[in-house]
Amino acid sequence: MKHLIFLYLLFTNVPSYSQTCEKFNRSYFHFLPKYVPDTINCKDSNGKKQGWWIYYNVDYHATALPNIYDSGSYVGSYRYGQYKDDKMLGNWIKFQNIHQCYEERVDSFYYKKDTVGVLTYTFFKDKYTVLEFINDSSIINAKSVYKKDTIYVYCNKNRGCKVMHCKNVIKVFPFGDIETTFFPAFEQICSVQNIYMFTPKKHDDAFEFKSAPK
Image (cartoon, rainbow, N blue to C red):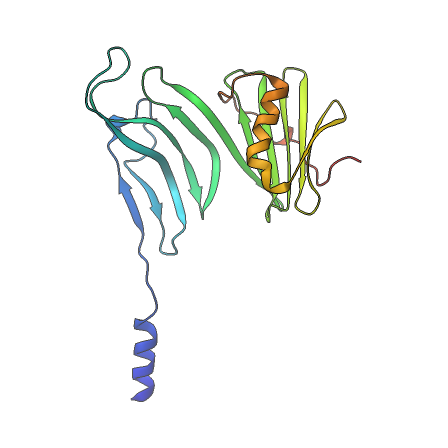
């Protein structure tokens, strides 16, 4: 009997999680594809994100601004795509949702061996960015192409980061500063607005390397 009581207490004190999902007001989302289901933002019994997700905030305008937006609740922008076991899959699209509606940015996620890759295309079809990092994020490499101009960023957690252009090192910065330095460095060289549009491209076209050239 003592053993049965122990087992009962053991199993009844184990935390249990059930799948959680969200219903959303589709009328807030202009040009959201019909294949995105009405039930989104699901987490499975292990707390992992699964299926279609939409990241958004509902805001409110007390008064309308003619030719810009109506009064009432609205979603200014949203980002949507799919998860599997907490990993982003395929295309994730960020959409500007009021006044001029357009795809601001699309990131295409892919996985190969121990590497995670993100392919980002701009509103200008002659510009794109590739970001690749190994699973523990100790090595992060990237390139940005604008017409025939290409710059590279090589980051190693132990050695820091450097930006290269035309085989010249143009900037060196600490590994921890990649988020604040990475995209501004690209914009400084390419001098183009950071607006994104996506045209699918084979993942095999993305570069793959593990260390910066000497």
